[in-house]
Length: 244
Image 1 (cartoon, rainbow, N blue to C red):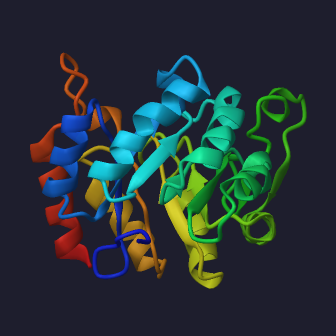
Image 2: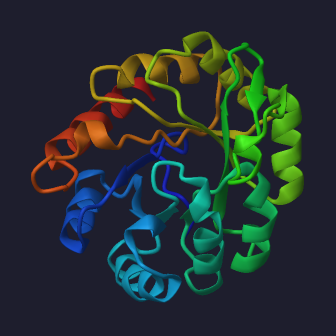
């Protein structure tokens, strides 16, 4: 089963606080969701694999294996998990996409490539790995070139992070336009909330992006339980249905 886009265009990505929470999210989103479980939540790959197998079953494969707040130190954990868990969706830093594709051993799992805003519309930072992110001179290249490189590595999408909600609005527009030109999937991430979700999605869809996987995390997580709020998932899906 591939990613279940609503009307072949939008699929949510939200985090699960537990197996039960994951089941509830999946139902509330009418299966148009990749439910995230982060590798950083586990002490090692073995325990992550053991637990993620349970999520794979209840989500019919619609598991999103996460880094954990875009943490580049988790790149190898995600890649190693891919050897055992053939999830529909993997989150990865730019430089580790090829490694992860080789480990997952198929062409069907969706692997994104984390690129960051560079401060200039039309350009993105691809030095998002654990070593490269600390370089004095970051690797900043045109969005179209980044997309071409991601395709060469076996990646399926740009994960644009951290956006800070609408703080880099003009950069988001140019990234969306590039994804539209190149028939590429866009995954906007960072600071997205029920309050700005509509505007962010309008920008992306207006640009003509064919497939979008918006990540909405902390803004819809209950602070006490750590669970994603089901009513918020329903609200987000309702907005998607209005826009698509």
